[in-house]
Structure formats: structure tokens, C-alpha cells
Length: 194
Image 1: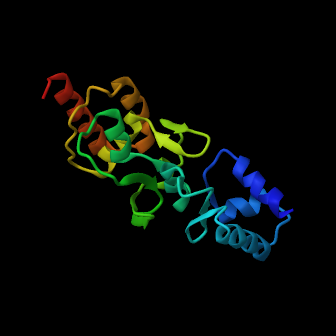
Image 2 (image 1 turned 90 degrees about the vertical axis):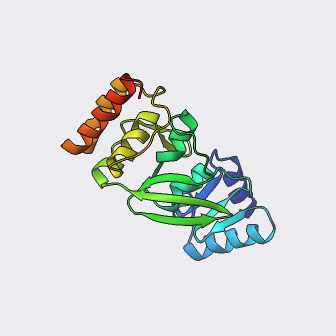
């Protein structure tokens, strides 16, 4: 029975598991029994304990997957996405995450920066790519997330943005006139080559 438990975990597509997820996956399992199994495999080196309530197949887990499981719901956004898209150039090893609360968490030497968005924004899936093990904002959604939280922000290169998508996603943020004006200002500056 215990080996079957480990085999199921190792065959699953994810690299990170929360205790709550595991309770749902192994429905008949008691909390204490599940904790005992996890501790057994951690001591044997067959599973990796990341932090309270979070476990991985090994120490080479997907950090984006972990980021979206520390606080749920959450998705990768902000500077992390914009850096990958070539919209900002400043290097940072931090992983930026949209969440229901603002907090900085350090796990295994990686810093995760959680920024709070209102629930009607956070739970809207438009512009969010739902991958098998985590969710990540499109560059346009990440751009809007930053503009929503910052009155002024310096973007190095707005060329990669699809402005039609930006304007399609803008209503997610509600009737925010000042945000709309900021988006239009960035778009105008981009068109003028500033």
C-alpha cells in the first residue's frame, strides 16, 4: 500500500504537492496516516519537504509550480513574466506572483514576492495560461497587473505587447479611469517611440 502511494505521486505530472491536495487525492486516508507516510518517504530521501504543508518529488522541483501553491489562488505575473517577454531588462532572481495577499516568502534560497490583487481580478482567467501544474499571465496581463498596482513604472521595451490584447483585457480591472489613462499614456509613448 505504501509503495503504491509513492508510485502514484511519482507518476503524477506535478513536481510539488500541498498537504491539502494529497488529502483530496487519497480520499480514504486519515490526516495522521498521510503525515506518517510523507514523513517516512522524506526520511528515506524519496520525497522532499519544501516547507510546512508543501512537498516535492525531489529537490529539483518547478519553482513556478511551488509559487502558485504557497497561497491559492495565485498565478505567475508581474516582473517575472515581463522579464521573460523582454519588456523589462532588469535581472532579478525573485519570482513575482499575483495573490490574495502581499507577502515575501523565502523557500530553499528562492524569494517569492506575492502582490495582492482584488479577488475579482485575481479569479478572472482572461489572459492567464492554465498549464498542467501552474498558471502564468500573458505578457499583456502581466503588464496590466503592474499598471494596476503602480501609478508609474518604467518599461524598457513595449514592442512585444499586443496592444489589441491589452485593450481587450483592460475591463478585467473594472471601471478604473486612472488606469485606463495610464495604459493610453504608455501606448501613446510606445507609438511615438519614446
